[in-house]
Image 1 (cartoon, rainbow, N blue to C red):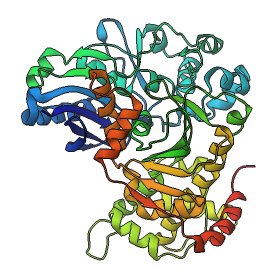
Image 2 (tube, rainbow, N blue to C red):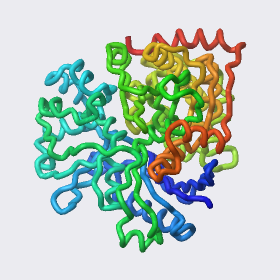
Image 3 (cartoon, rainbow, N blue to C red):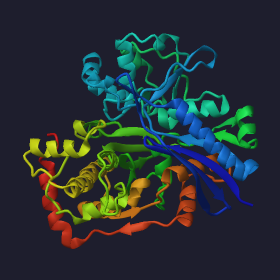
Image 4 (tube, one colour):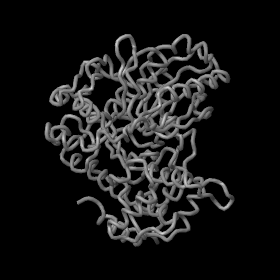
Amino acid sequence: MKKSYLAIDMGASSGRHVVGHFDGKRIELEELYRYENGPVDMNGSLYWDLPGLWKSVKNGLRLVGSKYGANIASVGVDTWGVDFAFLGRGGELLGNPYCYRDHRTDGAMERAFKIVPREEIFAQTGLQFMEFNSLYQLMVMREKNSPLLEVARRLLQIPDLFHWLLSGEESNEFTNATTTQCFNPTTRSWAYSLLKKFDIPTHFLPPTTEPGTTLGKLRTPLAEDCRLTSANVVLPGTHDTASAVFAVPSSAPLGVPDWAYISLGTWALMGIESPQPVINDVVSKFNFTNEGGVCGTMRILKNICGMWLLQECRRVWNQQGKTNSYGQPIDWEDMNIMTANAKPFVTFIDPDASEFAKPGNMPQIICDYAKRTGQVVPKTDGAVLRTIVESLALKFRHVLTMCEAIGGKHIETIHIVGGGVKNKLLLQATADATGRRVVGGPIEGTGIGNVLMQMIGAGDVSGVEEAREIVRNSFDVVTFEPFGSEAAAWDEAYERFLTILPQ
């Protein structure tokens, strides 16, 4: 008899409710509900629309319950990292959570280094320095004397917040906590001494909870309303990348991988899996991060601006009323055709340059970047897209060299999971740029990893190696081999690409 598990996979641009049906050997995924997400500008600040998101979550729960009811064994939520909200006395929600792309943390890192040296922050947290990390969000609140820091009883990151809404139980799940730059991955506890130096309170930071933990049943009124009276709430790897990496279909022994991963969505998270944190001068120099994985693993990775660049171009062009040859709004396939038809190796960008991080007229921002760096300014929309795709592939090559230096091992294969797998041009470009085999899939890696962790929590799966065997048995992947005839052109492009990176 099949058992069914519900993964609520919430990304920064969209969310989905995916049911995983397990027959003892294979998982079959069924997406039942999808909804849009994105920050809302209120009075010059960017917030997440928490009430709207909760309404969408409940609508999806009702749809799942109407179809499967008591057959749903459990539900778990994964989201992006970093962002958070506060609970006060009596379970009072203290405001809508800010979006990490809000400008209030601009310049915060430089101010932070005047309080605590960069080296000390890294030694305590092992985390990549990014201006939107929770540490700097909290520091800005302290600078502005936010009363929330004093009256808050509990800090909950975004997936913790939804697990609380679902079950009534408060938890701070481990994998998401490690994204904050407020957590020490070596001691597996909050970096209390570091936070004290920033005068950030810690009374709202209790010990973290491991993936696979059962929080309990759905709140009774919610369970009855959605016809999910048998469902437990079980913590997956609540950081979406932790769930996505869990779904990599590798057969290599745990702890000695000869592969790297890219979780490719709005962000591209590229790195290697490790049985322990790696905090040393090499990791610090490369500005890599130590983030928690499931089942005792760590993810040693680098955040790279990913499909966000393409998403913003599409958003801007559709806002401008541009259409395809059929008079319809430009879709992803239109963009692929435009990319393929553009001349290769003309212009490059550093996808992680600061000007690309915020919402805006991305095609124009790319053209301005090209002009500023003395390159050919793209003249067509296709040229803009070709610039993005080739630049991402070259950035992956650059980060791959860092992964090999950190891991001390030649990487044979790059596994790419997530929605970006649909962009076959980018996957082939990555194979060509890196000279490595690229394995694309599964596309729904995050939802799969979420379901697998629920299965481990239920005792249906023993651990990572069995889980990945189930992935290999259940989902097709597409392999991209590098074209040897293209190697010289990509090598020359890479040398040019390196000249625009920060020195």
